[in-house]
Image (cartoon, rainbow, N blue to C red; front, side, top):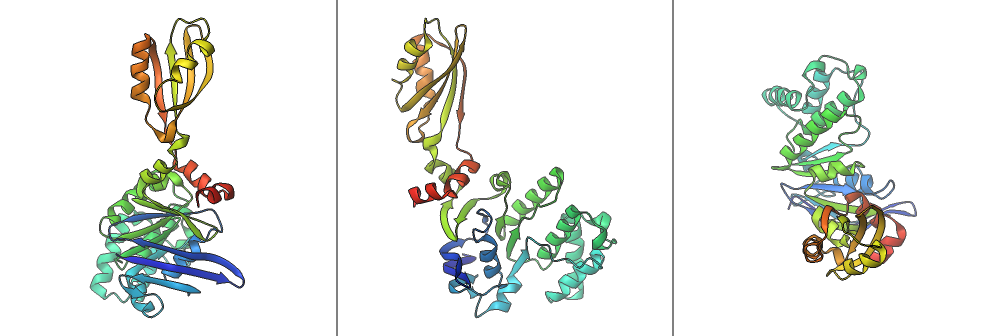
Length: 321
């Protein structure tokens, strides 16, 4: 494993920002690290990258302790913090060369890595400009380039697509996915669609504690009790409420049926499934048996946004803890 966090705790005075958390991140894995503001995400990432000491617990990167082997750990990590660490009076080439020198690269390696980062981060057109003249999107690209200039084994990215336009976001997502095949990546973002498009696994932290750890599919499976099927059918009945709702309620794994209106012989319903069961096939068979004409049937799956909201709302956290 590339990163091992064990019983990590961090206090700021009397306030506990990180509360005894543990998780692993493996080589070739892109981990989405999520949580509301103040949850402890940035503090955890600063500890992993050796910017902050822990109050308790341990963190190892490729078997090296962040406390006892801090310098060696830093050599293995590329870090893009939320506040991009740029020198605005340097031009892009000067800044990348300076960053590479800080990591101890020799002259041939510096030239090679600078060419590669300029290409993959799409900053060739601005390479001679002062960073202070660049747009926020280009500054973010330069920040990504400095994080990767020394070809680190681990990337810690805090809001890496902040300020980018939609086309740039797609490019950076593709770059992160490509890097994730050989590196370990921790990605923190408030854009949940970005997590769905990029990450292999998700850890959600709330009030300093981990409240979920798993793949997107696993997290959605845990909350599938909220899944519904929207159904529209055509049936010649006198009253949809009394003639159709009771028959729909007999379908296996249907928890509840909500009538949402009719238009002539066309009737609409919202059905809730028991424990996230997929009831579409049973509904199709029921429609055939009853002689109904199916006009629409769509399954609404639990979104990551819903999972995140439920896990970071105090009442729901207490319910699932």
